[in-house]
Image (cartoon, rainbow, N blue to C red):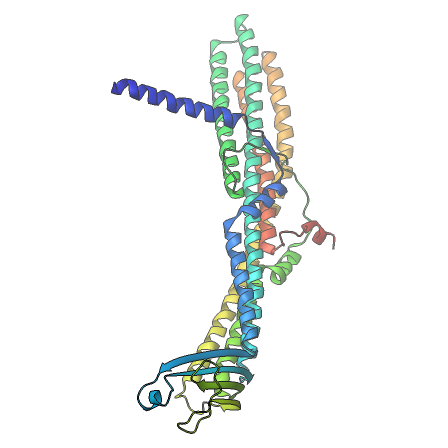
Amino acid sequence: MKTVSMKKMTTLVLSGFMALSVMGSSAEARDITLQDSIQIALENNLSIKGYEADFEKAKWARKEARRNGGPSVSFSSNVARLGGYYAMAGHKNQFETNVSLNMPIYTGGKLEASIKAAELGMTAAELGVEASKQAIKAQTSSAYYQALKAKNQIKVAQDSVNTLEEHLKNVNAQFTVGTVAKSDVLGSQVQLSNAEFNLISAENNYDTALADLANVMGISTEEELVLSDSLEYIPYEIPIEQCTQYALQNRPDILIADYQVKMAEEEVNVAKAGTMPTVGASVSKNWTGGHLFAAEEQDYGYASGNNWTAALGVKWSVWDNQITQAKVKQAEAAVEKAKANADQTRLTGDVEVRKAYLNMKSSEKSIATNKVAVEKVQEDYKIAQVRYAAGVGTNLDVMDAQEKLTNAQNNYFLALYGYNTSRATLDKAMGIMVDFDVNTLQNK
């Protein structure tokens, strides 16, 4: 009985997998461009949502800092149960209620510095959102180009298989009539078998690249994607000096570092405010009596049950045992650290721009070189085939020429891949905004 049950269970499981497979295969393929994939990734990426939450937090922090400079109203009330003489006099309960309005007039610059720091923090948080978008754009572009490279490698591998199949037919035909040796047939079969293995590997690499792209985009890896774009060569005319200068002025991390220096400087002003007097005004209304908001005159003591006060107060910490001085020194040290971080960020940005630019230019040169190489080995392969058919060339010459052709074609697509990924990396290194077209910069 247990064996039968296990068989039934296995059948049901396998049937379920087959049904899911049929459902998955019937799903409609999705054509997608590079820009489509970037947009989807930007919409789905969770790290961007986290930076957006930081920006929202910074906005409310700025509002808090601004509101600290305005009036505030407070309310307090308590009730006490009376006994003894007061209870005999009819005062069993006593309510004390107070409503007051307070307004800071002068804070020694602390309030203004806090507001400025909060405004700088909000701008830095907004730049953080942009930086995260730029990172996701570069990551998605790299994944898309990786998939395009794998797609082209499938074509190269398939062309190699087709070519070797035709060559094997010719070798078999010549072997049948006795013009070539058996070793030529065996060698051609081995070469074709290797090409078929390379095709399988290329197809697997393409499926893996599509899965990686789907993962970066934040969509299901089960979704069938059809890449609409192709690896192209579009000349990049912006000189490296302009790229580095643009990065210094626009990279989000550099701008954030500069804002952090300014924020640290404002914190120095906040600390220095501890040496200054503060001035504040207040107005309050007080009710004391046997009922809430009662206006009864008390028959004990000298206080009235209904009174109000208006006050202007000055507070100045003349000596705090050098606590304020210590805070100022800490804030000044934080400024120096922020400046050092900003300088290091500039150096890092400059290096990243130069590396991406030089890699792009190197790939650009390789594109032209490998294009010429492909044309040459194509001609060499045709010559090797003609010579072999005429009996003056060897089968090894044909297979060697075919292998060189495959390598040249793969190298050409690798150069295109390197060029396009380097351009995407350069855009990020320069701080090109996600919604900004770099071609408009080239035309300036």
